[in-house]
Structures are given as structure tokens and as C-alpha cells.
Image (cartoon, rainbow, N blue to C red; front, side, top):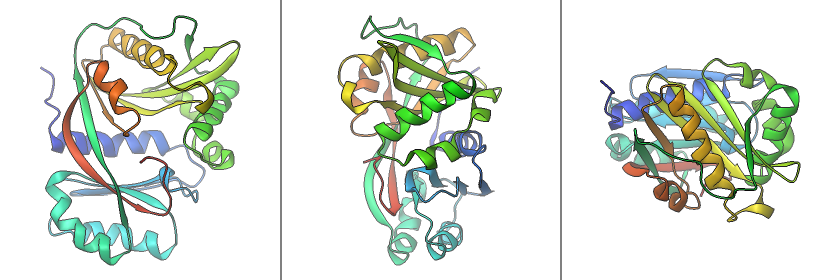
Length: 259
């Protein structure tokens, strides 16, 4: 039987996914305690350093204990706060100078058939080797306005060799124009860093990329999918069968392009 993707389960899956996804960064750090986790690439980019607060976090002191050293180090980061922890984190977040930048829906898709859709002139392939890693870095950096050196330090070729990670690339006219990372966690699969080159957005590339990646993941046994939806990505995810399960608050220390 598949586990229901409750807030508590999504908090755990998200924390574990960040451990996998950022764990190959040159200066990776990870902490996890009841109700609060951090996963840090160590690069000076908020979108590559995360704190996650969820059920079981108590009165917000654990959240403060995790965030305070990062603020003291002037390390930019994003804090994703699940609803049960929201009231306990607002005070520490304000005291530490964090800015509430967006309400971030976590969406889920239960097991259902899907066929590749979107632009038929796009080819989707798994990223492999140094060339695949470099293509992933280029698209992510372009899509999220991140320095390539920071992305390269965070997502090296070793990421593609992780046993539960699949990075899919969208090819158009011989160029990589889209990327998405799928992290398999038992019967659940997380969808991360869905990005399209800005020059090719809203042309069916993202739909082709994600629908193909989901179809491939289902062949490997995935029963449920989850993702955090940016405002720009929400309509696409909804049209592919994702529904909102919960809404988190995202606080930022430093500039972010997730909103």
C-alpha cells in the first residue's frame, strides 16, 4: 500500500530529497532533527541552500537554532515552512531578518497513466556523464538566473551516478533547452529543478519534458509524485494531473528567483 503524502511525509521526503540532490556539492552540509532540517551547498546562492521546517518542530527554537548560524555566516538560504510549523517560525524569521517571498504549494499526482505530450519536435533523454552534467548546469543557471560556477559546484557529474536520481534533458535542434530531476524515494518520486531556457519557454518543451519523465518513472515503479510549485510552473503541473496537497511558506535570506 502506498503511503499517503501527508504534511509529515512530505516534510520527510523533502528533507531526504535535499540530502540526495545537494549532497554532491563541493561544500555540502546537512543537519536533521525533529521538525527541522538544513541542506546547504555552501555556495552564495539562496536557491542552493535550504532549511525545511515541518511537523514536530516545537516552539520554533529548533528553526531559530538552524537559521541563526547561517545568518551569522551571511550564507543566503531559503526556508520552506510547512503549515504546522508556520506560527512557530514567524517570530524567529522576523527577528533574523528573513523575508517571506512566496506561498509555495506542494502538489501531488497519484498513480495514473500518462503519455508524452507537448512539443513533438523535442527529444527527451537522460543526462549522462560530464557532458550531461554540464548541459544540466547551463539550463538551470539560465532558467533560474544563477551563476554557472555555483551550479557547477552544486551539481557535478557524480549527481548523475546516484542510484535514485534521473536527470532528464530536453533537446531541440541539437541543443539542450530544458531539464528536470526525478528523485526516487520508494513508491514516491520527487520532481525537482524543472527549468526551461528562457528563450524557449511557453512552447511545449516543459510539458514534453515532464510528461516523458513521469512516464519513465512509472515504468520504474513510481506510484506517486510530488513537487513544490513555483507560480510560473503551477499551471503546467495542474494540467498534468497534479493537485495541491498543502501550501508552505518560503522565507528568504538573500535574493531568490523561486518566486
